[in-house]
Image 1 (cartoon, rainbow over the protein chains, first blue to last red):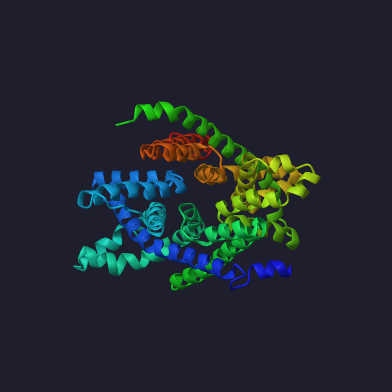
Image 2 (cartoon, rainbow over the protein chains, first blue to last red):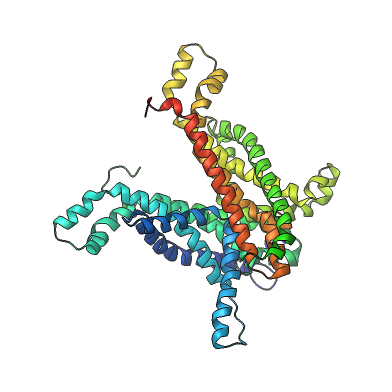
Length: 238
Length: 231
C-alpha cells in the first residue's frame, strides 16, 4: 500500500505531479472546446431553422455527418487532414517549410465540431419551444431582429438548452481522452507514460478512471446547480 | 478521384474490418443486454445496498472514458497473468479482441441498464396495480405487461446506444484490433494517402444511417397500435 501511495506522491519519485498536469490539460481542452462548439452549434441551429432550403440542407448534412462519424475518426481527419491542407497552403509561400498541427488545437477543433453537431439539435429544440410569438412580439415593439435574439430569445434559450448542453459537457469530458492518441499530454497519456515507466498498468489506469469519475461527478453537481439557477422563476426546477 | 490501386489493395481489408467492427458491436450489445437485466432489477430494488452497488456500477462506467476502461482491462489484465493462469482464464484476456468485447459489454450494460430502468419507470404504476388486482403474479406481470410497454419506450434510446457503440468501437484500433478504423490507420501509415480516411468516414456513415433507417421502420411498425386508424 505504501509503495502505491509513493507512486502517487509529488516530486521526482512519484507520478502525482504528472497526473495533476495531465488532469489540468484535460480540463483545459474541455473548457477550450465548449465556446467554439457552442458558437458553431448555434449557427448550425440557425441554419436548420432558417427559411432558406439550402441552409436547412447544409445544417442537416453537417449534423448527420458529425453525429455519425466515430469521434476518433473525426479527430484523425482533422489532425492529418489539417496537416495536409496546411502544408499545401504554406508550401505556396515557403516551399521547404514543415508544418505540424498542434494536437491541442486539432483536438479542440475535432471535439468542438462534434459538440456543435449535438448542440445544434438542442438549440433547434429550444428555439422551437420558445415559439414564433416571441419574435413577433419583438417585431411589434419595433425591435430589430438582432436585438430580439439577444435580449428576448437567448436568455430563454439558455434555460431550455441547458440540460442537453450539460449532458454534452459530460460526454466531451470523456471524449478528451481520445486526444491522447495524437500525443496530447492529457490525463490518459500521462497515465500511459506512468504505466510505461512503472509497469503498474492496473493501478495507474484505475487512478485515472477515478480522476475522470471525480471530474464527472463534480460537473454533474455544478450542472444541477446551474439548472436550478437558470430555472428560478419557473416554479420547481424540474 | 478515387485511387483505384489503393482501393484494390485496401478495399477488401476494409471489408474484413467492417466484419470485425460489426462482430465487436454485435457481441458487446447482446452480452451487455444480458448483463443489464440483473443490473436494472438491482437498480429498481428497494434494498439500499443492492441498489447502491448497481448505482455505483452504472456511475463508474458512464462517468469514465471508454478508452481508459479499455486500457485498464487490456494492459491491466497482463499484470495479473499469474492469477488468471491459475484460474484458467488467461487464454481469454491474452487476446485483445476478447478484452475489447469484455470492456465494451460491461460499458454498454451500464448504459442499457439506465435505459431499461427509465423505460420501466415510465410505465404507469396503475399497470402493476391492475395486474396484481387480477391476481397475476409479479413475474408474469413483468414479462407480459410491463416489459412490452417498456421496450417501446426504450426502443429509440436503444438505437442510439447501438450507434454510440458503433462509433465507440473505433477505439478498438488503439489496442491493435483491425476493425474499420484499424485497417484505415494501417492503410494511412503505409500509403500516406489521406483518401483512406474519407473511405472510412463514408463506411461509418453508411452503417449508422442504415441502422437509423431500420430503426425508424421498426419503431413505426411496433407502435402502429398506438396511432389512431388512418392517421
